[in-house]
Every structure is written in C-alpha cells, then in structure tokens.
Image (cartoon, rainbow, N blue to C red; front, top):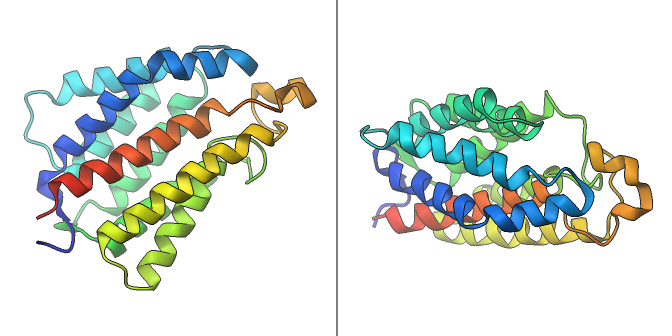
Length: 214
C-alpha cells in the first residue's frame, strides 16, 4: 500500500464529501435555524451539488477538484459560508497543485494552507463558536501527526477525533462572531452549524482518502 493517496485518484473523495453534505442538508438547516437564518444546509447543498454536476464527466484530480469546488462555493452560494469555504478550498488547491501523492505531510500542508487562507478573510478565533473551533484543532492534530512521522491512516484518525471534539465544544460556547453573536447567552447550548459542516467535510475527506489509498 502506498503511504498516501495518488492525487489523480481524488475525484471519488470529493464526491463522497458531496454525498455527506447532501445527506446532512436538513440537519444543518435545523441546527442553523436555532441561532441563525436556517439556510446553511440549503446553501451548502446547492454549492456542493453544483460542483458534482460540473465534474460529473471530467477526469479530475483531487487538487483540481478542490479548486473547482472552492470557485463554485465562492461565487454561487449565498450567505457568508460560500466565500469562507471557497477561500478554504482554493487555498488548499493552490498549495497542492504540483503533488503526485497525498501523504501525511502533504495533507497536513494542504490543511494548514486552507486554514491560512481562511485567516485572511475571517477574524474569528477558537472559542468564538464558528467553524474555526473545528478546523484549528483538526489542523493541529494533522500537523502533530506529520511532525511525529505517523502514516496517513493514523493521522487521519487523529484528525477526525480532533474535528469531532472541536465541533462538540461549540455547544457550550457563546457566539462571538457572525450573525448568531447578536444573541449573546441565548446562543449557548446549540452546536454551531459551520463547526458541524466543517466536521462533516473533514471526516468525509479522511474516509474518502482512506478508501482510495493503495
């Protein structure tokens, strides 16, 4: 087995992410409706479905797909999350454009680049009850796994655990960024929709990559 996934084999991984967003559309809408506008699931489903339709007949690699996905999300879906996720995915794609194999170090670099791009457009920090609460610990777990020389399967397991913990941490937080911040204490007790969707995305990426390894 390769110590990673060939970049050329990444299309099914991205389609897995699409399927998970589609499957969780109503759930994301319900969560968002508790302290937000309730349109997160609908908007995410629209963007990811458009992406799946656009690449349906294309022979596309993982990083090329990330770039197309980011472009669609940035330009075609409403709300704040389109530009946020669009920036995240296009930054990942730019970092990995020349890769042949996605191994632990490579995926760690992609994730770090995505978060770095996101930092340029959002001011939220860990603890503000946003997707940052999922992405930062997931990225830290991936960087730690790379530094320790873990293989990709181990690293992705660590990433999923960290992403889930980050997602769950938002339930007890008071929103300090985004529209839900206007609710103050009333935002406590509910998961953040962006933290949930980013956990879904990272988990689907991890599981999809594991399926394509070898």
